[in-house]
Image (cartoon, rainbow, N blue to C red; front, side, top):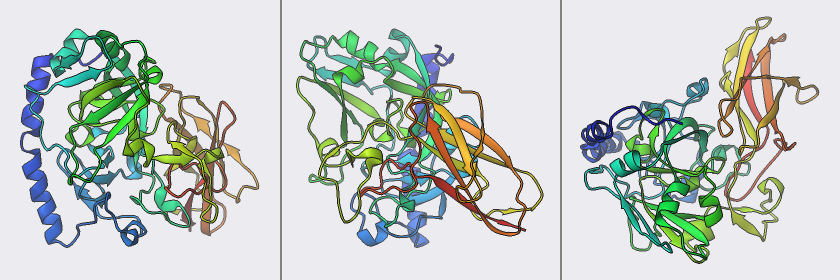
Length: 417
């Protein structure tokens, strides 16, 4: 597979200029939002009332981004409008944004930046961006990046957390270096158990835990996990993790550490807040539990659930009866593969098979289409479900306390005239 054809020195130098004033411009932008009375609460210390509010509809443009749906400003949480999912790859400027800590980097000097690999290894490494591009074979993968809480606003009863619609997801072509190649160069010592990852973002308070995630040593060396320096053929946007981002194909984005700076090999299982306390799901099928009977056993969230979404029509769109309408959507899974997608317009009495676009990658989403001709005026509801090659499908109803790993059957309501 091939990386960018642009010379490393030109690629690196140009991106310093692009992001030099990111922090200043962002502060000016946020000041303007505050002046308009539109600042939303941050997510880490979000109040329960705010977390249970209706999904955000305020549109805002941040540096390097087109207008996106603003959930919170500090740290930034920006949702992608559904219309951007009507193509194979989500444009970088429209790709959703999710940070956990408000101390995110506003600029990075790539002349001094290094990626550190230390811990239980023979040869600790300190690698520049140019080292990664010139000393290692480039690797490329098409993969969906999806927030663990994508669709959280649809859970009933509502749960705390960022009230995402279905726009906390994107599909991109990621270019970089296999993590396995980096770990092989560092030389893992016998007894390596886990590998942890930390970025340049920092907690706002000493009591706030640093954002560190971990994978088993076996997973880290599977040849698919990668350190990406490019996204859709361009440098990573600042808000999506410039200069480096961990890419864990098939797994939820909580593991895709942004602005990656430190990789640590451990001779024991990693223990930390964002693995031991946060981002955990019930061990039950489809991560199910109920408000009255919370699960007693949980595990760190991991592989993505199978699910499908409508991207056309959009909610409350007006359609004409007796006129064929091109219903479209995307189907997502953990890499097993989408077997089929079915759509119903009669509350599940009958399901019609949608046409799948050709697959463009094991970890990519699969676009699907189905012409539908409404015959009666008034309100209509379309529902969709995907089935993967293992036979797993979307469930009729789902709930868990954190609003994670949504895989309920999705619907869209339209008006027919």
